[in-house]
Image 1: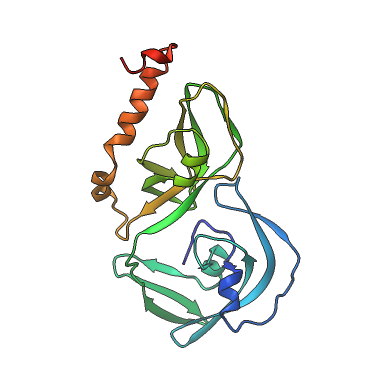
Image 2 (image 1 turned 180 degrees about the vertical axis):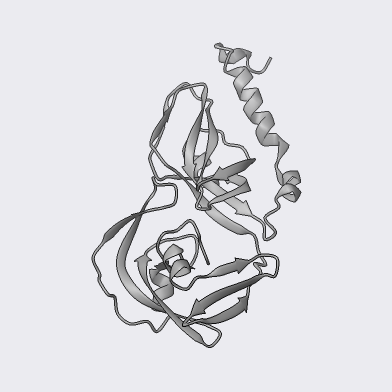
Amino acid sequence: MIDTGATHSIIIEKTRRRTKHRKFITNRNLQLFMGDGYSPLEAVAVVDLDIKINSTLTTISAFVVKYLSADCLLGMDYINKYKLKLDMAEHTVSIRTNQTTTMISINQQSEELRLPVRLINSVIIPPLQEVSVLVSAGILSASVLFIPSFNLKQQVPLLMCNSILAVERHTTSVPLYNPSHYAQHLSKGIILGTIRLPPDHNISLQVDNIPVSDNCELNILRLLAHIQDETQHSK
């Protein structure tokens, strides 16, 4: 995957093991940050990658990480080194080496892209209140469909709804409502859910998939929160 928002190229450890690349240049742990500038990304090593574009062999030093949303990211270091150009109209990618231009077709993604949404800072949600929290979305900018984490909703009494979010500079915000009478704490880095980006980057067709029941439940609980006597809730 080509990522203009990444300053350096990155490959995950599991993917590197499936290739025939040489040993690590260095195996020291290095601290990186994702495009949002907040979320840490620990690199366990640096390796020289050999990337073949048609018959042209290219190389780049890449950080090796344990987890990433893609198997491999080619960042601005690779883009600048080989003067890489994207032609979205023609669906082609071209690189330049030794005054020779090599061009390949863009591989069209056949499935929607799903990325985890992580909390950027720890937060405490007061009882019977809603707060909007800043999250790392793992993508530079797009309109995306947010799906709350089922596991998190089972563990913490918070309400999150399916919603359309606008991601800018790798970040967006997610509203959280606490229907309980106790404050709830969420730690930095916890996954609140996933965002989904269809292949054509147009998620207007996904709006019909948003359950109405989530919004209804949220509104009902907000109204019930004003009733202090729980015996009146059923009236």
